[in-house]
Image 1 (spheres, one colour):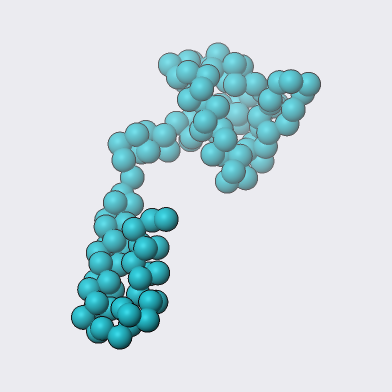
Image 2: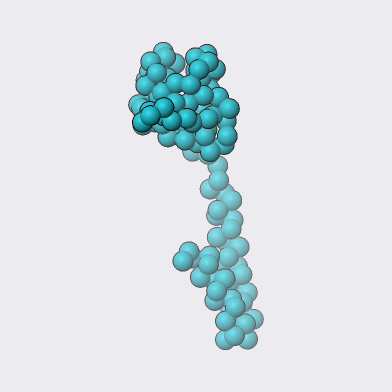
Length: 114
């Protein structure tokens, strides 16, 4: 249970509801948690770099034109500095966003633009 969920649960207890100062305190704490969540939603340096790599991945897939494996993508000069794991993780994000299609060819995963 998260800290926010704890405060929300506490706010519904009869003993707490009967004391306005406790309700006010709990609501204030929930507001602080919400504000902290909003302020930390700024992308990190790695997230910004990953966004740029996602664009390159889509460009590579467009230039290849046919479904290809991660190994085939990494053979391209634009992606050869990244590991197979890094590209696979970023491809998973693109598949989740329906920007890339994943197909299985036996045991090999092949990717193409949606």
